[in-house]
Image (cartoon, rainbow, N blue to C red; front, side):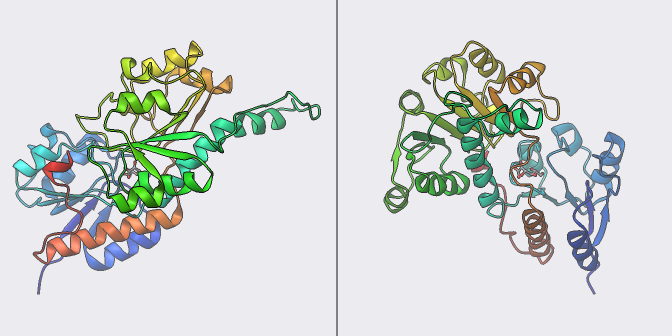
Length: 330
Ligand code: 8YV
């Protein structure tokens, strides 16, 4: 019979996922609950038939050059693949897959949650109460901004962007979006979304911006200092995608200067390090910062595991896995 592929998973996964993978493959896991050391990752690269990395592994050209002849598939546990040099992998004949679709609703929920949290000062209010600073209701205390009737600009109208638009519409926001290409008229109508070919123009017309595009060379610092200036000073930015899509230093400067009302950030430029200036802004109640929790649900993690398994099985059976990362996506 067919020998089971040696699948090396760089992180500890939920028990149910590990069990299923052990049934199907010769699966090995890193049981430490820390990222692999460079030496361990190196070793995995040279011995595995299939590598299952996560966002905490930097799979760069240097590492891919060390891949053993057996390594034919990198099945990422997660959607974003900006930590993998996919071009180098493809050039070497290594297929790369990700886990689209199963994180859509959870991530859109988190984006919507951040919009509400920042606009209505949820985290600031909760902290004030638990710190003992609530001495009674006042007509002028903890006033945020109404979200109903405001205009949301979504950057990246893929699955997550559309799921956010659906939620935001239900909250009475009007929807604008910028994307590489227009979505179908049917989807635009369903979402009541207005397309902006020019990101600059869209930024000048919205109250809230949500970043929902992938991080690629084309979207690195897409929200540049120059572009950020198009936003009005009462506007809010929410990012559940990747930190580097916005110029974080420029964002911090504008928040400090009062040129933006606030930000809700689930992702950062140098995770897990978060700039001291952002943390100070968080203590001042100007930003809500989360530790990359967009897809943190039990259900989501199990679904991600299922996706990884399907990709590996399909590939091992000699077929095209459903979630290949293609050069056109980079
Ligand atoms: C994952 C994410 O937890 O899927 C993504 O792109 O950012 C997160 O939801 C992470 O990537 C796991 O590798």
